[in-house]
Length: 316
Image (tube, rainbow, N blue to C red; front, top):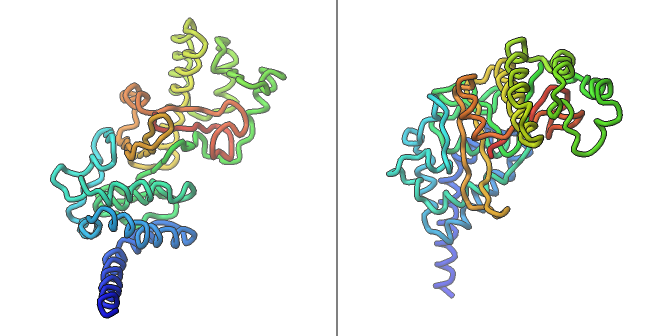
């Protein structure tokens, strides 16, 4: 009985030590997000991470390394950088690079939330040095970069400042009466009628004359391609122009995309990260090789769009 009591006391002390070591990280993550996630954050760091440590035995080393802000990697601010796994952002000799508890915990945090400032923002703030509390319109901020727009899975990018814009369906009914309501409608992305496409940019999108010229050139370049490939390339071209317009509107310095890697719909445990610091015409080809763009084809045609002129975007 005395031995069991001693073991219980030891376990309780050990458990309290875990909560004490995890508390600064819980506070850090709470500062970034909304109160509705506070309990989830406490649970994932106090309980889920503890359970992982109980199986893998390197959780205390993880907590110590995460609290050591000065030795975390800096958020990449030069060029466009792709990491096959967010852990690849850490130097080879960093204690978190091969920490098993941390590898498992990343996946748990990734599934924490899909709304508002959620999983992507929390992961970046935890993994990179100098995370600061951003303003209400900023996803992530670090000491070396003031505004990172962070997107997880398929996200919606806005191409217009008017979030209540409602003109797309009217345009479609005018140029494709009845046809636009059918399944698999490709509309202006499938047509070679440049007059219709021209009016699409005048009536629906607000991208500027240079963007319009580049996109009309893409329509001409792809006119002889098979329909599926033609539609895909045109959507990529429009989506990319919307992304550049999005940066003009929001003023972010970098655009970061994360996703959960899967094989045959089963998670691999990896979370790729793509950081775009140079969203330019010159880098369009390389960026489009990493991202899929799906511009609106009809009202409500994007995941989170509240108006017209948006595109979905996500890592391939």
